[in-house]
Length: 414
Image (cartoon, rainbow, N blue to C red; front, top):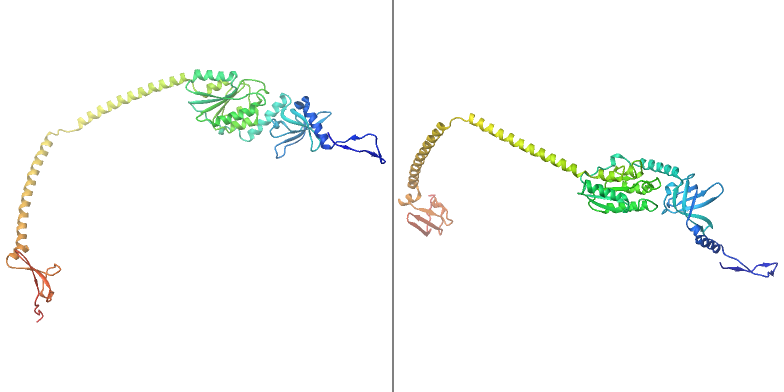
């Protein structure tokens, strides 16, 4: 710390100078001193919550108290366990002691909160369950059905525990057709809940996953608490892939069990639920094959019998066709002869009409000395009044045509 001042008394200089410090210097010194003490840098405190505030910033402000003392506390929104904070609850807080230099306040900077004792944990569990249920996270009508024959099964669990081995052993024995994809995560401790959330994000980023199992072995309420965390419940609720929950033993129930699409009493049971037994499938297939063979054989027999009966009925109903066929042949012969006679008669009539037309045709008339006179535009003239002097005209005879000019047109009106 730095800073001095001269102290005068009645104008007389004192014999010694006393060092003076700024407020900031004192506050900074206390802050460094407190934070350098290893006992205060990682401290666990049990107490009752008092004066709890949770403003829009997301930070948590409260005090811890007992019968004799009170400590001001703050937990920033990145801390864990804020759901356990409310006035009057007994909690266990972990963090460090320091000074808020702006006000000179001694504060306990908390980074993790847990309920104090199993009774408090159970109370927190019940409160969480009721709240999430009221929001609709447990509704049965939103739960999805599981695929009957999954090709790829994801398992979210610890990679080192016995759970994953149990699931692999059961699936390998019952349904070796499926591919098992392990998504590793912690399943206990303060890091477990965030890691489980990240595991579900990884799950939904994978392609062609049909169903997922989230699992861990048995344990106490504290051991299983990660699966009661709200962030885990909402991660399962938001999953695009159906989820089977297999947490703890059959008597253990977690929030995860309520949110999941299906709950299994144990991890091994989840492996039995997620896929059928291949031996049962083989029996089903063999049974269906036998039924199909029987149905096809029966249909063939019935169709053959029906066909033979139809042939017999046709033979009984069809009459003797020998006489009608002969009659038809006679009629066809007579019709062919009548047609030939009709054609010959028509030819004769056509020749007669053609001779008559030829006799009346222009060629025959011109042969008797008549001519056809055409105007200059090629049309046939029918009157002398159609010509004027100088007109060119054509005259057609029986053996050809000539061109001439009109020299005189007599007056046809006189």
